[in-house]
Length: 401
Image (tube, rainbow, N blue to C red; front, side):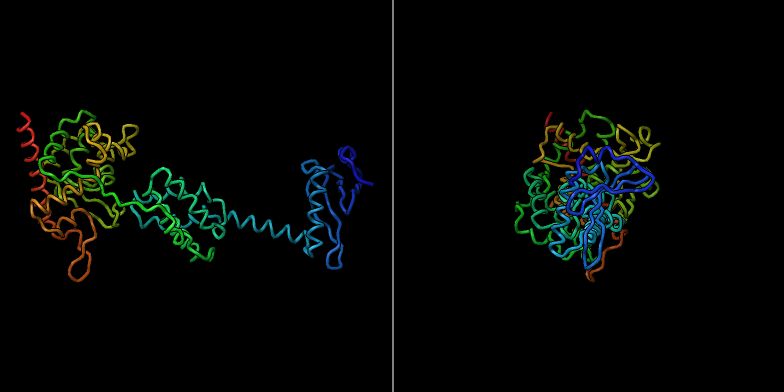
């Protein structure tokens, strides 16, 4: 006789455990403690076995019957339902342990020591914002090319094409780590390259006409924002380092005796310590900042907390407030400005300029230049550049009056 839900619900504990039978091998096993478990009796390989289905009432009578029918279907296909259940549990554990997200985290922790702080944060954001939400839960070996392409397409619809390219590169690095550790067979990121939107490379907007540079320098002098942002804005064209390096400048990195800024390797894109000679104008700006932020870590601290550096958008927003659009000049564009005018107007050696830009520069034998290579020449070049900017600014001011 088939079991009913009221009968299952009303079953009470007894001195000995007992069974309430349903149909087709299903029964409710009532323990002496009062706990009730669904079981199914079956035969496989000539032996009588018991298949555990679940706990009543969390698993209802109706649900228990459905699971029994699924088990009977497996038996008809010569599959032991108990073994199948164990295999699925094992697969679920592996699915979580070796998910794309977990494997990516392992790769990130192992590799991040090779990167600058800025690059490390960029990779972390790509994983957390672009890739993990899309397929981070899937076993890395089960992530498909269409999965990755769908994630990339979402980024492209925002017209964030550079982020799309970087996301594909990061995914490729994770998949190659997965191949090396035996968790997947292919770098599917390589297979979607031709399917991505191809856009023309946009170089960072810059101003290289000397007259316009003079106008820009004059405008910077009249910036009406905070002293911290104003000083960072004034230093940016003088030192022409990467915007992230400027905003992360620390007082401990300033060598006052040698009049230079010594940036440690872990902050640099090329992972090599970098020396920036400080012209007199830069020294003056830093000395003005001393009474304001000199007791803290950062030269340009965040107004929301001195333990953090200034926002990455602070100098960009300052330029916008001066009337310069994103198509005219960006904080990164000061580097192109310096490279062009130092070469074409001031006639300095390209290798000196490239070295000061912290680009990878090699000598005739193919060896990378030492961090102090041509330091005396670069010191003279930096002072000449700063004087040149000062001269252009003065000419602009005189013409405007």
